[in-house]
Image 1 (tube, helix red, strand yellow):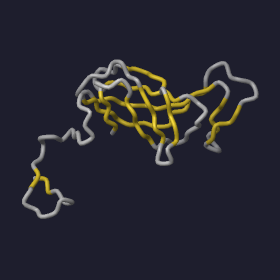
Image 2 (image 1 turned 90 degrees about the vertical axis):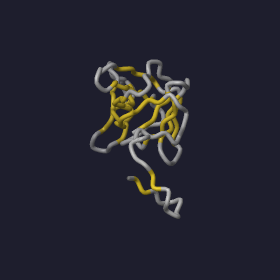
Image 3 (image 1 turned 180 degrees about the vertical axis):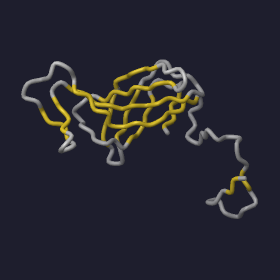
Image 4 (image 1 turned 45 degrees about the vertical axis):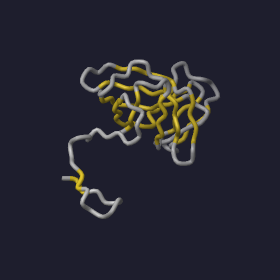
Length: 140
């Protein structure tokens, strides 16, 4: 699950895609759980960091406390995805309709706090602080 912050202009997510072409645009479609309201944005930037693909996104209609289904895709009229080789192949003649390939799916939760320690389970469990170790947390 990815965390998005409604209070910042650009959200950054890191994904490990099924496949990726650094030369194609990345498009992210989010669908709000329950209402099926969708928003589709093209990434303002994306790059392979070696540990995944870092994507900068500028959403305009995020609602705090809402869950979203997220679908990341790439498309091009100049490339076609070959399902046999699992790679994008350059077309000698561009296609009329862009070829779209979903490269990643996940859920997202929107928070209004820019806090990396945020948890959707906050207040659901108590931590037993009587243990001596900082590495082990016992939830009751």
